[in-house]
Amino acid sequence: MPGLIVTGWKHANGDVVGRLEHDMAGFVVTRSGDDYPPELTEPFTTARNTDGEEVSTGRYPVVDVANSCELRSMLELTAPGVELTCEELDDRTRTACLVHPDGSWARASAEWTDPPEVHQSGPRKLWTAVERIRNRLNAEGSLPLRGALVHITPDGVCRFSRGGWSASLGGDEWRSATRPILTNLPVPTYALWTGGRLTPVPGCAN
Figure (cartoon, rainbow, N blue to C red):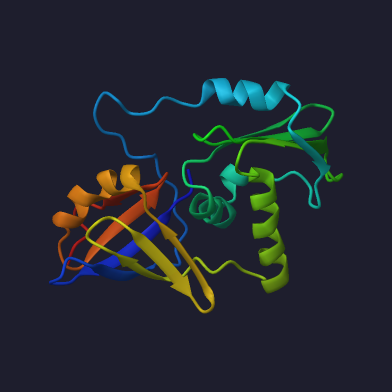
């Protein structure tokens, strides 16, 4: 899956400060232990076959978000843990489904580049989040991720900023995944951020 490369320097107070690299990246989500969360199979079945609480017409054609690196990474910051699929049939009907561990899901379907019919349910309007990101990309020509400043606190909160844009990740689950890594980071180090987890790259510290 697409992800972000973080270069950071650990300071005496435990903070890690650095930036997101401009390079594209694709990684397998980090795994550890026997309790690694399973795929969201049941929510995907619901997303493919159920009418949503909210039904609308999308502004942009269906896009394969999972294979659009910047779009996918920006969506992960907006809705950490989101999973995606995209299928195209012989009649050129394209269907994208998004699901989130909090129960939110979305489905957008249309023939080729036609405006899609969008179904959404749950606390997060996932396709609306995708379209907001695409609005920004179309208006500004790029997304603010590449080259953004990164500040990771010892309790695992990760803050990103570039110009007037900022975003942060936190929460107990994310902190538990990053805290052991932050404790042992060399200076400097390279790390991969994907699927809501931060992983140092072996052999990349200077």
